[in-house]
Length: 130
Image 1 (cartoon, rainbow, N blue to C red):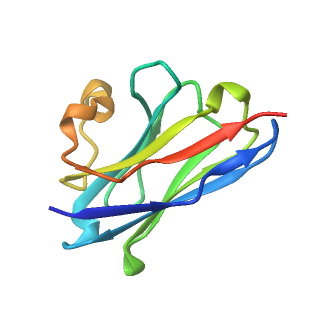
Image 2: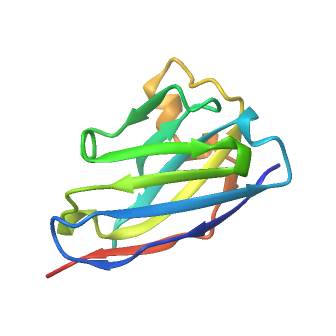
């Protein structure tokens, strides 16, 4: 299993951007697809996006499509979530998660199911407020 350590996050104003990082260790990172989830205050964890092991494919939740972009640097075992045009409703604890198998599953349900991911970062708070 791969171990994940997150960095980034913080307090930003609506319309601002922010970039989260997720550093992996313990295995060949390109063998893992990596997803981002978030948990808003008082709500369940929800899917944000996922990127394939090569970084060539990605899939996003409708709520962040066009604003958030996942990317990865396999040479340095890093995955990023670049968030633009942030809204107050993006406020949440953000988590990266990884699962062995670099290819994205054909089913969107399988891509977005948190139970399909067995390695998790520690979470980082993102607060969007004026």
